[in-house]
Length: 524
Image (cartoon, rainbow, N blue to C red; front, top):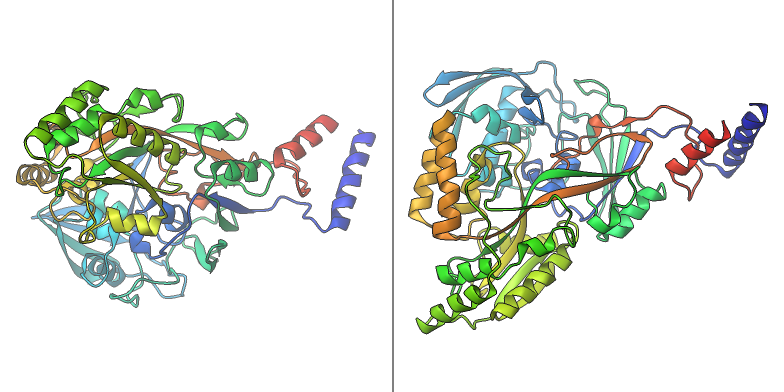
């Protein structure tokens, strides 16, 4: 062992002279696929923002924990008061990162802010569309929240609500997020990095992580290589072909569903036969195990099989090129302008191999006879096509999207994706509108059955979308971390859930942690 300790001492001396840290570094570097275009906590349901903000800077009222169900977060308890009203008891002694105390007035303000018209907050549009919330502050830690129509799962819906100080402007998005979480917003150098540091006054347990730096690299191979080289600790989203190291790479069925959303209002996409042709022209099975991972499921609805009401009797549209061509010909014979150019809009870096997926689907649709072009855009421009109000005179469009629902109930998806006034809805159908309202108000087996019926109507009768895949996610994690990605990793990445493996860590620039650990092990 004398020889071994001598080798280690020599390495320590050399790295000391080089100025590199000798002990385990309790800060982490996370490399993401796309930059943040906005940092307001009321937009944290978006995956690119949620991975940075959610439960790190800004906390929710309740929290849905995979495997454990609904848990307290800022609220410690809740009770149904009847007539659509729930009483929430907030945690005492919580302060925001600016030093002000959290109270029920802050929650009332946050609800009014995301439901107001001054700014368009995704929390309100996504999860509370068609629902009017009113609040009554009972005391500093007690608040009554009434939903109209009544929401039997209001405590679950509150797991999406982030709380900001009542001083936060109602009519403008914030530039520096202020929250109650275990970390504080330190610095954002646009185009370069985001830095978070530990919140010394956090009400909960002190995380092992003391700070985080977020970098942005659109290329999956680059993100994976950064973790392998020790330049980053987590690449939250990498492509199938880059997940090659079983010591660092994790695969897991995630809560994301990839689909194509045709504009149901614009010719020729407003003809159901054209939308049926789009479905029949895609060879979904050809993607699994090639561009996308084995284990990827073919989708028949917008939410994953883990949500209640998922209709297991539905089957994906089979690949039938001749039927697709026949449907287009039939529509053309009735005067539908099927030769109109359609623009396919994709989002750069949205998921692994998104460009390859879009190019393959474009080719399939062109082979069926569609006049179509592909545009890949950054997230900010993509949102202009994906969210209302849509631009006038834009022509027929099909937007590729990946939707996350890890919350277990279709209510987190249906209104804002399919209701006439839904933020990201490209359809308006009275029957569907009524079905969504009915399902939302029900409980238990009746709720599940109504959602199942709704999924069937969307897929078989309305043919609103081209459903594609329930995805498998890949993340690369530096072996120095004690962290396992879960179904929620695509929508949030809680730094407080990250630990560090015990042992001797010697940082040598250019080498990975795995190589350093192997050196120590082989030396001993």
